[in-house]
Length: 197
Image (cartoon, rainbow, N blue to C red):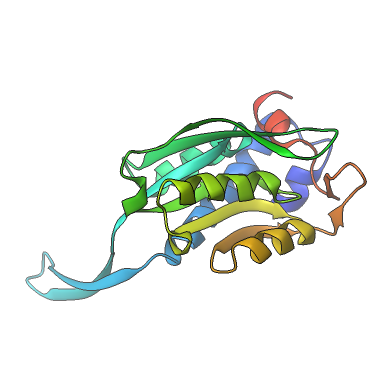
């Protein structure tokens, strides 16, 4: 239901943000389910032992600015005090090519599991470039999970071809791309709808 609401051109900004945040929280929870765990036990207030699991390792989020920043709060809601890095990659609207403008990442990122955040996966150019930046900083591909709300089959194929061991957690796979390389039926410019309109 939330996907229908955020796609509707008549949806007001407040509802778009509310329902997007609900989807983002579910995606973050699903992403966390793919991280490695180890067995642990705790003592309960009833003086019994409970055998459970705990996360094995450290994590951080990396948002592809600007739209990816909309997913940061969902990650923070699930993981208190999580470190967040930023990568600014913009797509040239005429060539659909990605260009790196800025990156600010935790110094120990190579020792962390990374949840890469961007709500839309169209051609895959920005996401691929973001992963290239993370790999250049020493992050093993197997420690990166890419979370997004809507993907195109073309973007997933390009991403899988370059990074077959990287997991993509998506909310919905759309029909494809139009001649301007926008996801269709899509929802328009996610960042504009989340922050501006």
